Length: 461
Image (cartoon, rainbow, N blue to C red; front, side, top):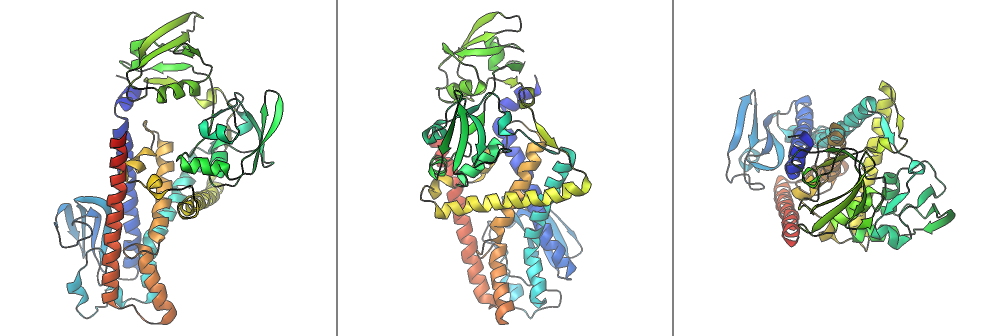
């Protein structure tokens, strides 16, 4: 059985495994940031855990580990509750809620004995490392693969516009000439800027005539209401490059080199037209394909719409149809681009986050999700470039979310520390305990709610 068929059969496992590996790696690195600065300032770290060894957020319930080993003053382990991780720093109000220790006089090696600026670095350590991880990953990607993109002017078959794009004024086959006067943009850039309402006018060539499409805030409204990150796409012919053994395509009789020119007695030219039929048809309904083989002979193939909406085929890549521009970077330019690219991604995520609270078109329930929603962003077939790109982006998300001024998150501790540094008065440990407990309970409730929404959506389908 070919690899692409195996991945097709286990798409959700591939997505889930990628998310698990990426999150585990990033959790360990985040906690290492706290660990590093704690050790730098000679603060004792009692535990370093991937996942929780208790029923989060209740530090004294169901305490057990899947693995643990003590080295020096620190116990390293893997907990049973797979929602994050933690380091237990002596003398600190944290997830473990060790009130016994806090009731004793401070020791020199404890967190509470350290200077405010030292405690600030200890608390920001995880966020600092998450940002550095993103920079390092993007730097490596720039140095190894370079930065490849297809300028929208190279999209010689025009664009594929979904219903949201068509409601704004786009049409299938439109050739984009410029966007607010800019010519060197990709479709990914355009989709992102449309969502964030950064585009006013898109000039297109349609049936030999130039037209100006005034997007205004209509594009952002449609994308946010319908939870669409992409409303215009590249379109290209439907030519089969490979067919998986025992796949739906193989059973129908599709062969390498076949060009699909019709689906269910409707002529088509492009893969996107076929994909639209596939996605909008009921599983088990008839599927008839009209194909032209490498020998020029036309054949009619019959089958059914598969439940997974995949035929088990490989297609020609974008490089087979379009001129792809690639920027190659040397060592130092790759570092510079890694830094700027991380900044661009961070700004993009912050802008998206702001829309949750500033756009009338955004409903929180529609845009909130848990582990399943996170897993969906990974591709169903593994590739190193996609994996590292998404891992870096998730690292940015973790950095931003941990910076939020919510008790129980790093940002909550930072707020208390900044108060102390500005006023010269330390926040009472009892206040810290209550605030942290409330914050952790609220975070648990939010996680349960978000994952509950995923379950509800799955059953709703």
